[in-house]
Amino acid sequence: MAITANCAVVGGGISGIAAAHYLRDAGLHVELLEQHRSPGGRMTTATLDGERVDLGGKNIGRHYRRFRKLAHTLGPFAFEPFGINTSRIRDGKIVTLDSTRRLGSTLAYLRGCPPADAMRLAGLCARVWLDARNRFLDGPSFARLARDADDSSLASHFSPAFCRAVVRAMSVRMNGAEPDEIHLGNFGTHLGMWLDTYDQLKAGMGAFIGAATAPLAVRFNASVERVMVRHGRVCGLHVRQPDGRIDHLEYDHVVLATPAGVSADLLREHDAGLAAALDDIRYFPVLVVVAAYRRPIFSANVRGLSFGPDGALSNAGAYGIDRLDRVRYTFSGRQARDMIASVPGAAGLAGPEAEALLDLAEATLRRYIPVERADRRDFVAHRFDPGLCAYAPHHYRLRALLDDPRHVIDGLAFAGDYLRGASIEACMLSAQEAAVRIAQSCLVRDPRASHRIDYGYRASS
Image (cartoon, rainbow, N blue to C red; front, side, top):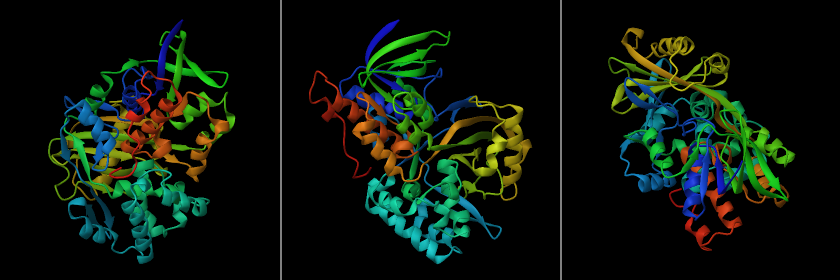
């Protein structure tokens, strides 16, 4: 069975959705292929207490201009402040970093850390502050640092105490990784998120995903098994349908907006070298549990708490500024991996394995914040695997391979969290770049179509 369309975008997460919109703006006919029965990828939602809640990414930085532009086009969507409010334990006391009093709370948060580490962190933050490109993977300053520093992990550049107190709070939240599993050349992505201030969509990310996919042609339950290439150019996809049937779908262009390992498997028969480079990109699993309680658990002054590497719980925080009775627990990092592996991955799961981990999370939080199982009304959980992307050292090498004519398949482009960073905005930047590549390589009726895609990476990126 042969069906013809201009461009296929494989993967219904934020990277794929954004790529589809950019390609439509460029004048192409686009189909979005998603292997599950609903879109969103790692922006998964579930029902808790009769309301939809976000189990994946939901915080929108003030610097997320691409996301905000698309939301404005699809909306209007109302935003509500969320900010940054995270705490750690120092000498048995809660110390809070709050974006509403950023300077003072940052100094208090860093107090007791080795001055050399604090000064080094300040210097790296300055690189991000002065050049917005450094918020993304392969930003110029951090690409230069990677050439000299990425043969060793980030943990070798800061003291163990500083890694435990400061760096780990960023790495486990963003990558599910420990400081010895990430690299200095990629650290700009962490600092860019740390220096931002955040809002949330009042209607939730599920409403955005629904609005973003409504105008698109979407094939759900479509598992792509092979990219077809003829004479060095993409010509279609082999797609397995739910009934086991394999359809040959003909396309002139394909964007793989899938995790690096999935893209590697689809690419392997055509370019083993590039597939091997994608295989080196690591993903670490993460489990998110959102629990509803009969009373507020956190307060307006303390809305989140990060935990050290000795336990499985990496973070617990209020679901929103005005939802202090809902707590979002995150299990990530080295100690969590074996424990969460036994939890089924279905969104909205509230089974015994997830409940046992929630009991553990409440016991961990209870040391510092009063919370009791008797206060709990309901909970939902989701295990992400592949989970959070931790990139690879010397990221500029992967970028060079993707641009090398010897590794370019005409009509094929890549988008995803491993290219420009794991944030929602970084995923959209990768989608934008993929759409530009496709638009420039194809013949469209309007020769100016590729110029309708915004090329800007700099101001407010």
